[in-house]
Length: 232
Image 1: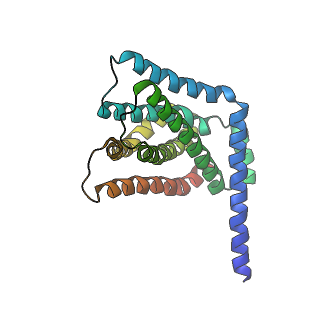
Image 2: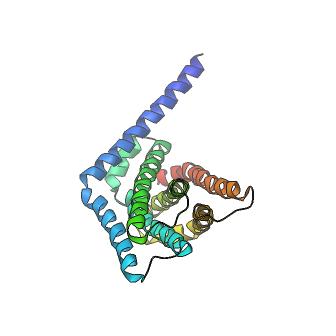
Image 3: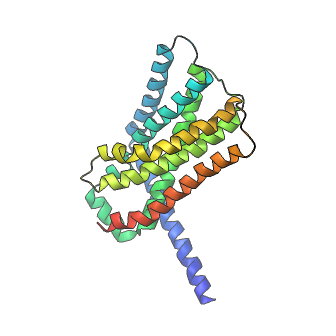
């Protein structure tokens, strides 16, 4: 009975400290509004330039490809700063008050929420400037949520690795793109179902399951690898 109570108390304490770290990141984002608005401007400007450069509304395949490529670069801009903005002194302070699992979970949750917001804003702007070729908007929105979560998880882990290499942001792209390409191809294939493309029975669930499995794998890798970065 005592052991069960101790385990419950430890689990509750872990959640409490993770939520405190998440709240810290949210408050910092609100205080540094120029970075948030900068990402929004980047999204709007990119989509508007695509709108101006195309003579007419793109077909479904091009629309889908453009959307996911933009999400990739939006994630690099939005999530990559996650660890690079943390100074050595601040990291030393976090080292004294939290364990690596709490810290990385706080970062993962914050970046997932941020990327989901950016993805939904991008989707709305695509509808405004590049029309809506979707046959099922809600299905595509669900795929966007799943894909945004996966992309943000990958680049959060890459940001943690790059932050330990002399704050070299170029490493995020070098390490992240080979890892993210298979997931991006899966998302492009999976999202075609929202355009009315017919998949054979079971193929849709296999693609969704593979995407979700890759997300879980990244979380497991983050929990396993980040303590070694944390000790450094």
